[in-house]
Length: 222
Image (tube, rainbow, N blue to C red; front, top):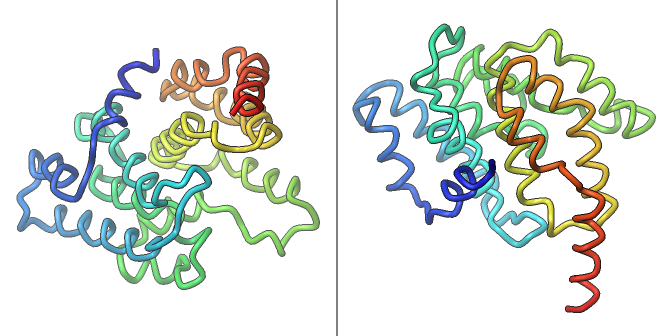
């Protein structure tokens, strides 16, 4: 089930390979191409010198989410999108900026891009922890907004969750378990309802307790 997506994500990527995908659909002189290019550059700059827990550049995650949308979900072939594909891709590249980068907020996103991208980032971004008494309350508020979110939000969020699920195994067992349970409770039901990456997300959570145990044993050996 996950072989195809792993193969897509295993390819060596750079700016040239990414925008070769975009040029199949938009001229490099078009407003759509330039819109995506702006988001690519802003996201790369916002997360410059920041790495994920596994040691990869953080930007690789942002680009991977956009690649899942292009190469696996075939976003350019989807019909009846309320928000155009090029804006969804821009939001995918920027999806962690508001939550993780102090210099970015929704007003700046709306001014630099537009209200559609700002709306998507509004739904994809958790509110600041200091607005809540507990982390659980923060997450409850975040997930409670899902029923009012646009379809295009789920394209981004479920692709984001899938990539996170596939790259969890550099984390400690408690975090892996927490994310697995959260995926089962909050993400797989929506994935099934909307027919977006449901089988793929289910595959990442299959027998996860056994996988965690095996992971711990391997870590103990090394």
